[in-house]
Image (cartoon, rainbow, N blue to C red; front, side, top):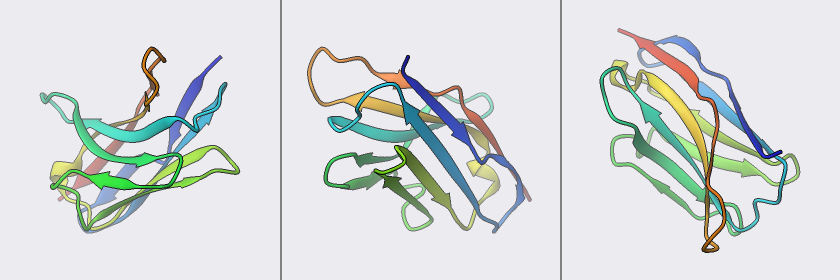
Length: 119
């Protein structure tokens, strides 16, 4: 059974930091692009960052560029999102995503972790 399990969310003051983790299990993700998305109150889900499991290339949304860093630990099948200089507008449920690069393969989502940034 494939699982993406997020952790590390919480309440933090503006300017603070959090690190989210996404533990992936149940299959090989070597041909996947791992990403973080978020959905704020009353908003649609939006892209935050992604990393290619093989090679480690990264890409960020403009709104988080320079503040967030996505990384991976191949040995532990875990993807991280280091979030610095947090702003109240970063408040959202953050979801881990695994998107296939091979046509016909499944996409996977985690259950989400809440991040709340107080002003």
